[in-house]
Image (cartoon, rainbow, N blue to C red):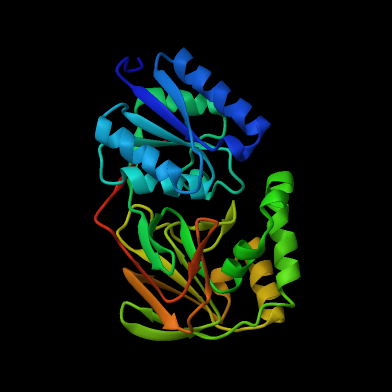
Length: 296
């Protein structure tokens, strides 16, 4: 039986489009039909989801906060509620929804609402990123180098229109423009050279593709994927290996487990976290003392 005391606040971006807005409204109806109290709160600007989530935690107005969006929206909401006893739900209406796939959150909204009503949850440990834009949590991954460059240049309008295909077009356009500088990466105080780096809490990347053999979501560390060879040919080879599920078997790809990553050289390298542009290097990535309870 659903807990009649469950109160759900759904945080969504009204600029996400009419179709997604309709899906959010329908999801709230499903929550209400399951016997829960539910309301929608709309964001007005980037970072507003964090403020709304923090207010909900401080005012004790709900037992669950649902992030309606992709991984970037989930990360913003997580920033405002990590460490609290409120449960984070995910309504996967974003572009890639990697964390939802990772945790097997239902993409069927009826089942998702039932799961929230049932109260089941798991605990994950997000990571913390410090870059030129300041400090933020991330729930899935941070990219430094080529993939971050793609995130920085992808058209927001095109992303809304054609979804993940916008990243494919941005990637193809960037291959001949990006310079592929070599980075010095400190992984738990040991230096490594790399052309690109992805620091990942999960095993998946860009949707359903396997980046690392093991998810670190339930552990207080992350995987550090070091791409050793620069250039167009190597980038295409890495992409094909990712699509085929054998990236970790590439001889010039190194995967390390760590609790701290620092990149200071070179400066002004693009950085992205959970699919959103997050400034430039230098950066520091580590593990905060704040866990998240996620409805599954």
